Picture: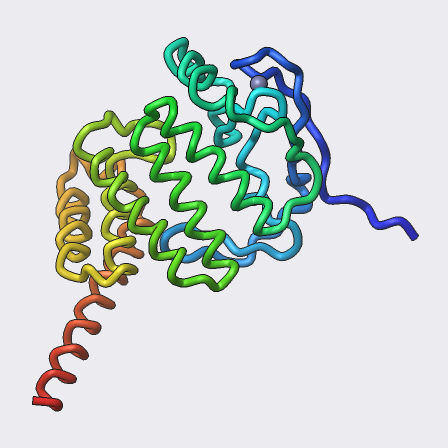
Length: 240
Ligand SMILES: [Zn+2]
């Protein structure tokens, strides 16, 4: 019996070289989310749609996150033509992807973002996804390396960008900075960011922009950090 594929191809026009290209997606009705880590890393049963979020033009090498593929400014287009296309070896990224193929695709997106001097929040978003791919793989060292890149870029974005784009606003940015800091062991910094978010929530003007679920997780994380610090203190006392 032939197995029904959970994947299909979609067509799109490359905004850089104007070729009509195909990219692969997971059928949405077959996506089954099992759980999510506190930094939003999703775990799926079956095909993982994260693997397919990096879209690449096989003709010119332009690549981006699937949600922003068609949003390219004239300046960005010229940067890709100057820095990416001349070095590009034509190859296709359609069809099933494993973690390795997906890592390769996301790293091409990252190179594109660097070439077009993209916003730091977009660079951070891609670095976070690369970190998740290493988490799926069980490679802690590379995961932490990309979490640090993501953290650094989210901090620059927080101070320098207008963060009002849909689901990702300044409050989610504060949360993710606090969460990644905790994950990387920067506990004092983490509690500062998370407490700052709780303070925003106590202001009636800001409260309506912050989801109560986000605050619930924030409070859990603050408590976890307190426990971690207390344990560290106890260990120091017992070994003194
Ligand atoms: Zn192209």
